[in-house]
Image 1 (cartoon, one colour):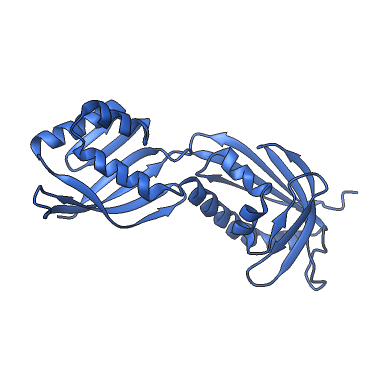
Image 2 (cartoon, rainbow, N blue to C red; image 1 turned 90 degrees about the horizontal axis):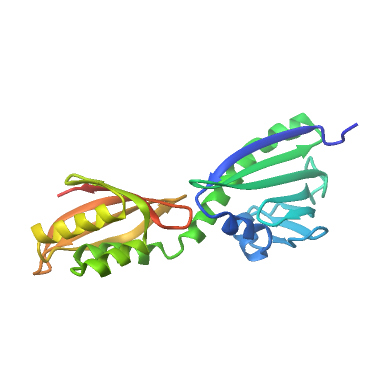
Length: 256
C-alpha cells in the first residue's frame, strides 16, 4: 500500500530562465528569499531541507533527488507535533521545463491523507506565487537601468549606435504600440525612433519614478522633454519581458 496515496498538483509559469529558477533549490540564500529568513537547503541527495516561515512555523525534510535544472524531490513535514505532517512525512516533487514565456514549474505534493492534501492547496498557491515573483525579480534585477537605456535611445542620432543599443535590450521580434506607432521587430522600432527624432527634434524621454514590476511585466511612467528641458508630454509604458530579461513588447499610453 502506498503510504502517500493522496496528491495535490499545481503548475505555474515563472518569467525567468530555467537556470535562474533552479538555483533556488541549490542556494540557501535564494531559498530563504523564497520561504523566509533562516530557511536553508542542501541541494544534493541526502541534503537537509529547513524551512522557517515568516510566522515562525518550522518545517524540515531531506532532499531525495536532484536532476540539474530539471527536477528536485524532497521530503517535507512540520517540527510542531500538533501539525498534520511530521518532519519528512510527505514528498514534494518539482519539475522544470522551458516554455516561450519562461519556465514551467510543475509541483506534486504527495501526502497520506486527503484532508491534509486539501489543507495545503491554498498554501502552495500562495508559496508558488511568492516564488514566481522572487525569481522574476532576480532575473530583472537591473530593470531600472535597462529601461533608462531604452529611453535614452529615443534621442540617439547615430543609426548604428541606436540599433546596437536596442539589440542589447530588446527581443528581435519586439513589438511597440502607442498612439502614433505600431511596429514589429528590432529594425522597424529603430527606424521609428529615427522618424520620431526627425519630426520632434531635440525631444528626450526620461523615466519618472520607480519601475513597478510583477512577474515579467513592468509599468514605467515617463516624461518627454524639449531641448529647453521643459516637459512636452507625459505617459506610461507597459513592458513585457522575455525570460532572459529582454523587452519583448511595449505599449505606450500618453496622458498629456
